[in-house]
Amino acid sequence: MRGWIARGLAAVLAFAAGSTRAADFYEGKTITIVVGFTPGGGYDQLARFAARNLPRVLAGKPNIVVQNMPGAGSLVATTYLANNAVRNGTVLGVIGGGTVAEPMLGNPQARYDPRRFGWIGGRSGDHFMCTLWHESPVNTIEEAKTREAVFGSTGTGSRTMSFPVALNELVGTKFRVVTGYPGGNEISMAMEKREVDGFCGWGISAIRQRVPHWLAEGKLKFLAQFAPGKHRDFPDVPLAMDLPATENGKRAMEFLAADAVLAWPMMTPPGVPAERVGELRRAFEAMMADPAALAEAARENMEIDPVSGETMERLVERLYTTPPAVIDIVKKINEAR
Image 1 (spheres, rainbow, N blue to C red):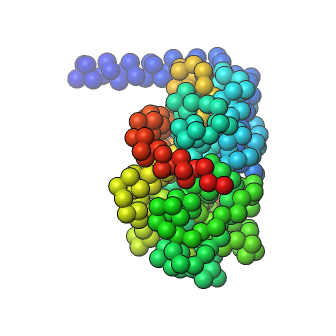
Image 2: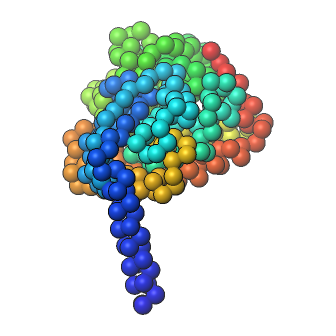
Image 3: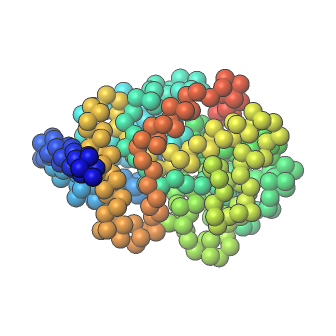
């Protein structure tokens, strides 16, 4: 019993000491959260949610502002964070999880090593859906093998490009991808206007947050889900990694589906002291358990099911042990224009 008490006391004292150090550093400072997408979407929502709620639980109570830096599925922001941002914990990032794989896949614009980022945490995992507007003539993956459907995309390197291309390459669908949309908000509006048939790579949490009435009114059809397992509310929608005929194809889909764990990440640039990353992780976890923050999230229909920074860090390390043959398949998918 005395040992248990001693360990508990040590943990409390360590947390208190960490809070003191964070207060010494952050008091009177401003944190900038760089978002790799346009305002109005799920990533921007997470950043602004953190800007309002993180100061309450981060010692020193710094001011937090949000800076949108859209481009190439958040590759522009990720590259900036890796190479140009201040490395002391006053600049954070909210990026697309798909950018983690870009250096592995040979993208020359991806001038960074994701293993060097300080992964703070994510508001939740997600299930990314290949979704069609209800008026589309395609209803199932089998039908998509014989009839074309058009998906909107932010561009090469984003899940909105890699997911439909993966289905084309590994399953035999006939999807056409139209690029150039700044973010998911614009893709969903284009789908409603019938500029495109659908949105492949749309998180179910974002759908429920932005357009819950579309679900209630049956406006959306779901062809496949990219995730480690099926969403409890969509048991009949197939997992993308179950669809390819070959084992390497299945593993390539599984590689892409890792994005579901890295769905809504917040991170620091490389080189931020480990102690400060730890302070930010503790504050992020506290924010995600804070009653006021949870009440705000509920009002905004924003799903909270936190993924720890440690979990993200371990997944990134695992991705970098993927067999070369599987990486070659994913590279081919990623290089599609």
